[in-house]
Length: 66
Image (cartoon, rainbow, N blue to C red; front, side, top):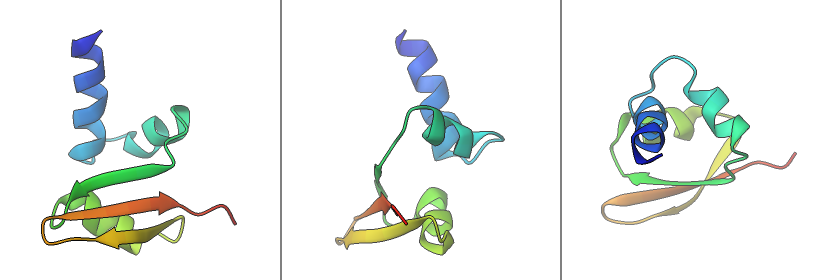
């Protein structure tokens, strides 16, 4: 199980093909990532997500309900 989880996590974190589907499949509503990570950059530009918090090393994104 751990290996499968890590594989899915890496798929999302590294923006590998199908990463959005992983978030949808697991109904992920919030994502906490390193401030300058590739995922943070993409979610920051995605109209389906909003930045809920930004700290010195992290950013928290929440899925938009509308």
